[in-house]
Image (cartoon, rainbow, N blue to C red; front, side, top):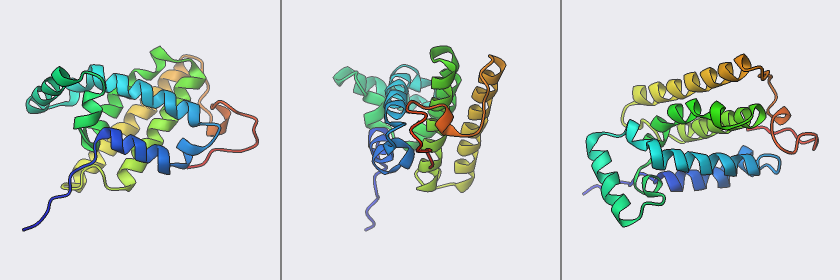
Length: 173
């Protein structure tokens, strides 16, 4: 008999990203990553149903009856996280200043890369993984374009947009 390996929950994925990712541990970006994670958890709690199947929505509703707080991040895994990231990116600009919005976009891009590099999405169908990663990248480009259209220059160099700029320590993934 073959033992199936359970997919990690979104909560576990985010915990691992914070532990392992350079961008999540860098002193200049810790606050940005923490804020992004909080906003992402709120987005998942309120808007995750958009990317869920009917069965998943029923499961979420049942879980929310027991404990509303963090239900989506407890019961769903990286596939739902990845599917939700494009929608989350589309909410970035209206809620944040230009610098904060760009920093959040960069953190989401790093999270997407981190999840994909570990094979946490689309393991059963590599085409699905590419499709998910492409949708996230397209959403990030659209969010960057929206920032630029709103008068916030989108220049290379993450260190220019994150708290702690001027520390002399560039942030690299």
